[in-house]
Image (cartoon, rainbow over the protein chains, first blue to last red):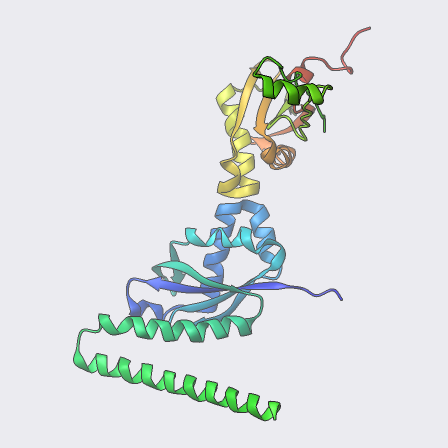
Length: 165
Length: 146
């Protein structure tokens, strides 16, 4: 009847040095987002952020973050994300940039988008490879995920045939 | 919200013969009725600053800076960027007339309400009049002498 709706923002944290990415933790990202919201929107923004916001998922290897906001005011809080300059972890300031790639109503839609996005990114990475070994790795990865995609679509087609008949 | 209607003038019949016939058929002239939902994009506020210690005074720049600090505290950088103007400022009475875009009125008024002190001195803003028309601020029935 009355359901609390949230919006999940799928963001990518872009840092200049990949090694620094490993240092990030959920609390650090949360504090950085909160500081940016307070600076951009003042006490009003701080109050809105304190209700139902958080970091749902953080992958330190790929730099993918899922932030959760309430549906009623997610746009206000989203507008503060481009102002994030750096994240403080373990006494170090990591300069970074938040790039929002998808907004979903549930975590599952964000995950589905992430899988498709990962596939596209792999295809884009191929021309940028410097050594032959890297190229082979990327080609193998692309082949394996397209094979799994082929298997999934084959399975769906079989399921449809079974349901039809 | 005030509505204003404006009637257009009747269509002139001084053109060629063919048009004359058309306009003769619609004998009653065509009037145009334009209704504005919110005619003024600005709102004007007459406010007055009250200090606990009655001897303090400030310049117009300090006054505007105080209001901007209040907006920045409550609404952040976005709030401090709301464009408003101090149209008049009376240094002895510490009263002023502000002009703000209608979209920023609520934020400005709420920020004025929550300003508590200036240079460690307790103070408060009293809002006397708010109107979308500047002319309405010239008269106040509270201070009228009959």
